Amino acid sequence: MYQKLTASLFGVATAVTVLSSAAMAENWRGWNIHVDGYPNTVAMDKFAELLAEKTGGEITLQMFHGGTLGSQPDAIEQVRLGGLEVGNFNLGPIGPIAPEANVVSLPFIFKDVPHMFRVLNGEGGEMISAGMEAKGLIPLAWYDAGARSFYNGGKPINTPADVAGMKVRVMNNDLYSGMIAELGGNPSPMAFAEVYQALKTGVVDGAENNWPSYESTGHFEVAGYYSLSQHLIIPECLCINADSYNGLSDEMKAAVKEAAMESAELQHSLWAEREEASRAKVESGGVVTNEIADKAPFQAAMGPVYEGYLSSNPDLRPLVELIQATD
Image: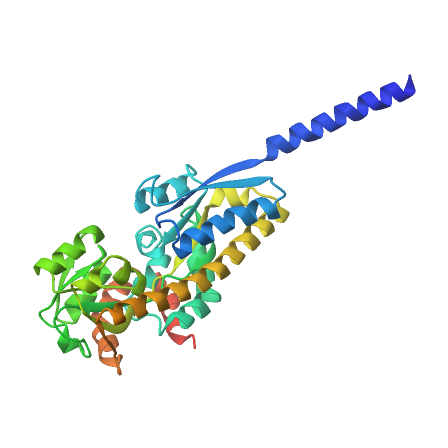
């Protein structure tokens, strides 16, 4: 009788444990705008794999790539509100929501990509993360999106005077329009999908983007001069809904963070390879590239852009100064 009762109680306990574990299991959904094979896509799939592995299956993630669950602004809102748990976002469109994140969109705020990561992995990154968390987003890891530089079909750009009078496509952000205007050019905000035809037909004279985007879109076919201004170095983040993350145990938080950091290491490596391959492809196709020997005149021209931004966001002056003071 005792043995039967013990076995029965053990069976009940086991069943309760299984049911409890099943109830605790979380099935997350993630958004990513990039296509199959892109460094970020590979890295996000790796994050999903590592997440299941490091949490013992208690958290699983189904990734939706290619923007299939909506536009980036829509997906940012979905993650903020909890409709989605995870997203891979550029900080550009997060800037209007979290002012601290908009700091990275200031032209020439970073000296180069390594400088950006030194900032993000230090106090500056903590300040940006705090601002984003207040709006419902927590960056688990920073992804590399390279540096954006100018390209056009007419001539190399070496000084601000070379931009004067040029119609340049920019993303829809007042900071980017202000940058072109202060260089003497005419900013032309438009959808990314429209840029190739606009360059081809002369609606715009030039645009700006990183190596992989310049190459993969075919823009190099209609704009054969690429000038390494590196004026915008805007990272991407692997972000999570703040409530989803803060509701986890410390052990689960550590596992999620570890999976995100490992995925970022993979993304950085793949991005470097992709940049190198894209540059080689366009240069073999006849593109003329040039390093800008002295960026100081470009940076000096940004004074009004910075002051206009800081007059509207005075609380962010310490963050801007911290970034500028970071070696």
